[in-house]
Image 1 (cartoon, protein in one colour):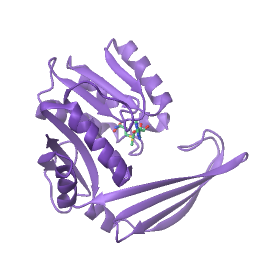
Image 2: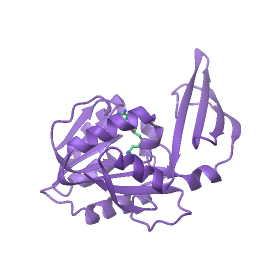
Image 3: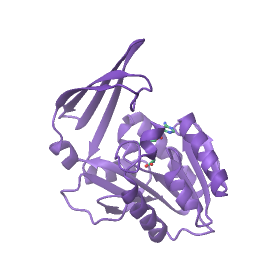
Image 4: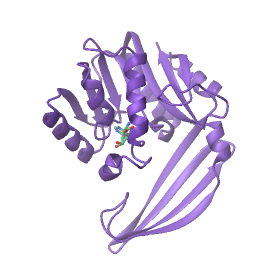
Length: 246
Ligand SMILES: C[S@@+](CC[C@H](N)C(=O)[O-])C[C@H]1O[C@@H](n2cnc3c(N)ncnc32)[C@H](O)[C@@H]1O
């Protein structure tokens, strides 16, 4: 997964580097990030965004579940001589006891959470935001759901891939649940030593639904875009990037 994050040409664990560069520039400009800013990036991966935020002099924290990604991020910060507070933890459980003026959750990670988990996370974000703080995140839209087709495919990796470092097969099924507007990406990984299945359920939202979900948890959407680089929103947007406040 770490290798995939760091591949600048793949939109999988992180987006392509060209987009991330545009996205970072937009966030820094839009939220006036400077040495007085305090930022927390939830699901920071190997720290692609946090590294750029920290270069402005901002106080930056990154949280991620992946030990590998955090170990890479810590090393990278040392090499770049950047002071970044990296935490290897589950953001649904970790107690955030500081206040931030920017909380980010990037690459539609919100969609992979269950309704209960989203409630827990929004409650944590609410208390992590200071009075003037912004929460910036993105979700898959109803247009994304409509455009997605159900499919099945099989792949063979002879020297490791996203789910395993060993040679393996992946049987991939994409299924759609119309009533809930949920996409299931189901990957069954078969190695010489055994097999496992990953179920990735992705909730897609209309603009009104995501606004309402935030409002139900005390957060008000103040702006929205087509992506986290500030592209104008249209009803054809496959993603919705949202800016919310307390
Ligand atoms: C799709 S990647 C996006 C990474 C990063 N935001 C970016 O855009 O480059 C999602 C990241 O969230 C992390 N993650 C997922 N669930 C998490 C949780 N509950 N707590 C902490 N990190 C989590 C994963 O380990 C992964 O690094």
